Length: 452
Image (cartoon, rainbow, N blue to C red; front, top):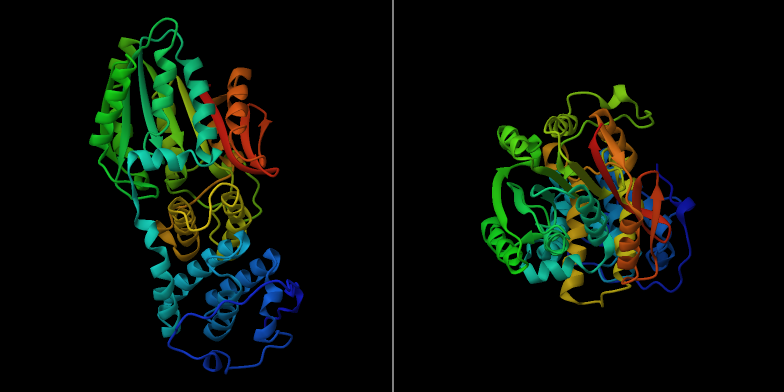
């Protein structure tokens, strides 16, 4: 039987919120067996420490995976009382994982209580369905450096690579629906030799990953073309319906068909990957297995996609993503990794958004979607499969790309951008790469690549 005495961490200031109205009594939930060393409900506040809450989540995940419904119910009851959705950052983080574990348990169908709890919490996640206007999304993206860091570093690298080209083809694989492009157009417009013709291609995603837009890509493209025209830049916009689930195969095929024309016309090809490649299915490495060429070099869609990119002989590939690992097949390993990474956005939100604001609800609904996908889903439905920078670097090298360093001008631009945000944000250089940090912890990495 699991013991919880090792996670007993005093937090006397914590107040226990009321339980939601569920179709089961507390006596019913605790009738099965005693819990040696477990505190009474009056002392639940003692579990308020983040380490203690993480251990409770781990024990709960183990109980769910071993089909121990009674133990899972007991732990869920404790978590529900110590992790309110309107608490401090650690409590809100834990509440997100609580909801995800409830959703996972409810799928088993073994206990009506799980289903009832899942329905209660589902009402709190309605903000997941919000669709942003262009203005809302631009403002949302600017809230933290999480996206702006990648925009700034990538644009600087792209501008350097485009020197001397009169025609530029940009393939934008971005989670933020081209929000990076207006700033790039502004910079292109001031180029000394005059702006090039810009061809912008996007993958019309067949999946809905937050943040979602309230307009079609065709409408978005029209707005971008008009914006470029206002900056005296000629832009062509095209959407290719393509899915990350098959490695953007339709997009790759279209680019292959145009490769000869591009080469003949002397066009630059820019592949901008901003927090999208981790949605391509991956092969999961066993825990503890070192990253080697043989362990990554296989027929995974990620490997195939990068090799296909290399075959296009791009001028530059920019890869920006979150520096974490959500790929383990083991639920507990995945939970620990996600919990010890996602505390960062919950911690940062308290520095720039007041409680109760719409933007904060949207921001945390985005996080809850990510947590639920990582924890409650398996198979093709589990699309949030982040890999750390080290794995992506190895993948790119195996695909015959060579890393290029960001210039001092690019680094200065990133630093200036960070000065606009809270003091906890920082920048560090790792080999040729740049890494955004929060209180010293890696958050997002930016890398730039050219064919080897």
